[in-house]
Length: 388
Image (cartoon, rainbow, N blue to C red; front, side, top):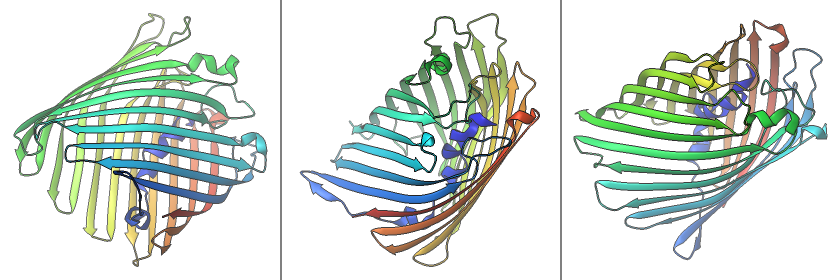
């Protein structure tokens, strides 16, 4: 189920952040009225199926460097954050090398206890790994850049009986190489969301939400232009000091502008919860069902994800994380269906406040009813993270 390669970073494994790493408190360097937080992670690893092939797999050792430079300033009613994040990787087979970059700026303004304004700007230079989409398989990663502008407004204090949130975002994404294959996936995404919260208990809010997303592909002859509409009802809660969660249930419909492409609709949900039985242990659960864009096969993908992770600090300096993801992709306008299982295990040791070591293993098994899309992958990674 190749389209979910990137989803892993934002779903199941996002749950699997090590306790020790989360607890690490980096020291900042004063810069005027702001604080500067530098960080770098250096890793060495091995990938036994870099291109996600069903047979004749290509394996390679690699070195990865991930620097981060963040500047944060806070006032009584304002907060600003600007930063840079990089991700370089060099493989024994150098055609798999990549360098990704992210520049961003985020600002918050509390004009009063009732009104919060938020804005965000972002630039990304990123890539799709070979085999991670359903486009033609190229020898090197498909590279892309994206610009994002987003804003959010919240009216109503956190303790108020009711509050309203609205959000707008625009993303301009364009591929920069392999244009014969990638030009079909250049697109603009415009999203609007409105959510009303109603306090029904001490720490529990019911919600009603509408989301509208316009997906406009830049190629004039594209049949993929569509509008994604979602209506949700749900709840957010902090039932006790040990349990927090969010749950949204709704109806999602994808309307294609071309009459040649059939529309699709599903019962959708987005649920996440964290249980902390001890201050040094946490269990995270997450499940989501939505409609994803196609990347070369089918008109769209009905995507279902279920993930769980257990994070535990065995000692003050040592923690482990165990995570598992189950993913299903049902391709609309195509007979293809993929089931993916992802297992991850990680251990972290905090040598010093400013230096941590992590060792991780990730296994991915994609089982498709089209044998050409089957694959298995094992990735081992040893990394060190340093801060001030």
